[in-house]
Image 1 (tube, rainbow, N blue to C red):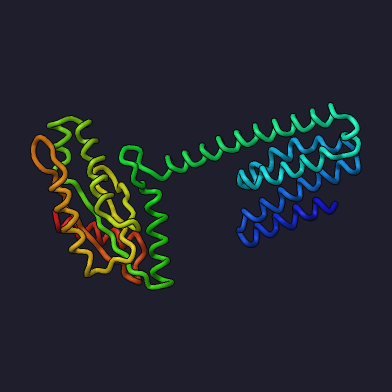
Image 2: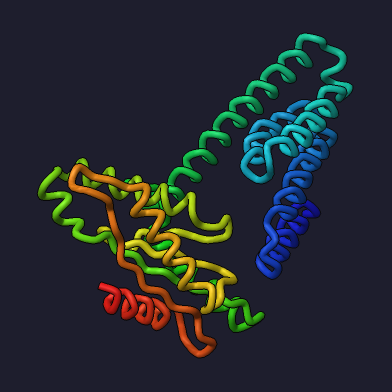
Length: 269
């Protein structure tokens, strides 16, 4: 009954605060203590609950903490008087518990790696590696909220590669793909660490510039355009881009913000 109440309280805490890391640790400790209490009441038979608990630990908390909690529980259970009287029973229990823990560790690691990979695929453009429009909406909404709360200036730059269809027609789609990849590399080398690049669609890209004022926007755009022309080449000549920028206004949402950048890009073309 006490264990059930502790689990319910931990879940309620996570629901109200959104804090899941500490709740996971609490639940992992509660589960492990429950196994120890079960072994005290039921004898060595109660200790077999360490197997599902070991699996749960590696999915509830970080790997190091999971190992610490699980190993402590196994060590305490291994000293149970009923098992201590028979060395072969204790050895078998410890070996199987460690094996289950190791397999759980591997499974949890692979699951985490797959989760990260899925997040990467969901938020990044597969060709260029920059963020996609789904991630763009989240980042721009966050920038708008920061502007409303703290007055943080931000700007957008929308860029379009000139005559990109001609590159595909004259040199093939593989060459066009390489231009897009190389263009993103040029942008990465010429933006700040806090700036975020998105593929807006086709040969259009958008850069979010946190903290950049309207006065600093035009020099940044001109410098970036010059770098692109200097570094990117095709057999037909240098690659050039058109660009339009817009600073964030306090009364605008992110959709209106993009529209203003798009209007500026249209004028530049």
